[in-house]
Image (cartoon, rainbow, N blue to C red):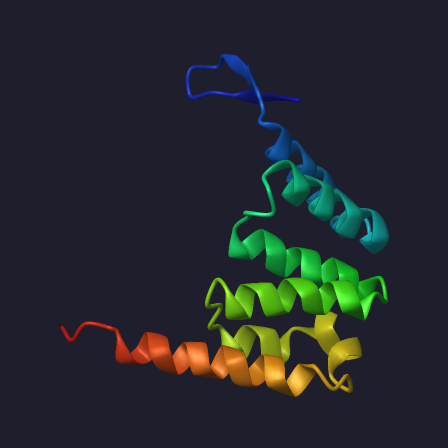
Length: 126
């Protein structure tokens, strides 16, 4: 794939970005399984060191594909290792409705809540 630069020149898009664009496209077309696999392929290319946003979206795709183990893998990763702290977002995201009855859901939310409190304690006072 090619990407346009500010000067109208085209450069080769990094492989990771190609996978993420494919994943987003599949998601938008309601092809959640293909989306989930594209995210995972992209993560593999960068040694699983991917941004929280992309791992969160991968978890959404896996949940909507009815593969809870993979959804929890990414959610637990961003909560435990990358300190994801948006409790409102994860709690209200309908993509995760299928996970709410799973025994791993409440401990996950507990970790996110803990992260949120930690972030709040470390915010500088203005």
